[in-house]
Length: 160
DNA sequence: GCCAACGTTGGC
DNA sequence: GCCAACGTTGGC
Image 1 (tube, rainbow, N blue to C red):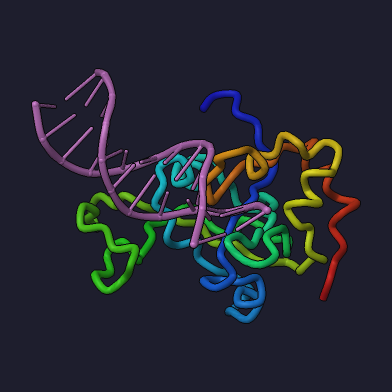
Image 2 (cartoon, rainbow, N blue to C red):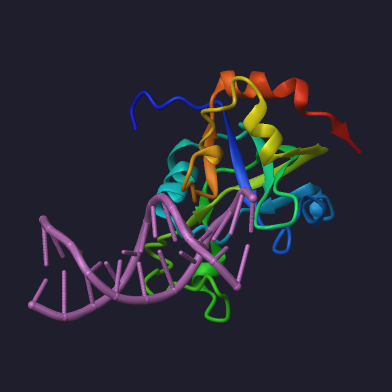
């Protein structure tokens, strides 16, 4: 993806699976982004996520979908262990230790923010183009460019 | 619960 | 390689 522009990442999680509070309760406030089974999303992690890239932590498929926290990419890509776990819903019989099909990165949560709901997000000038707002978007990881990131800043109110 | 949109699968 | 069928996602 030559010339592909990104600055930060928006990463979606269902709070019933892993919420921002769950991550804050984990060691070093860090979580492995397991369970991605979409090639485009995988490729973002494999090829483009860099340690230190800013992350918008987003809750999806819930009563109040939206941005709930700020974090950063905290590891290089590495094989997603759940692909080898026969008891996991993310098990992939076609994946091998020698040739893992799925990778993940660690995400470190820095702090929570006051919810920026998807409805509010749609109204922020400069954020209209965000992938997460596009019809039919289903990627769990989407790039956020620098202009979108800057446009968002006044709306990100830190919460402890 | 509805339903549009999308990715994946598999027969041909 | 085409494409219909199917399953999943996710906001509403």
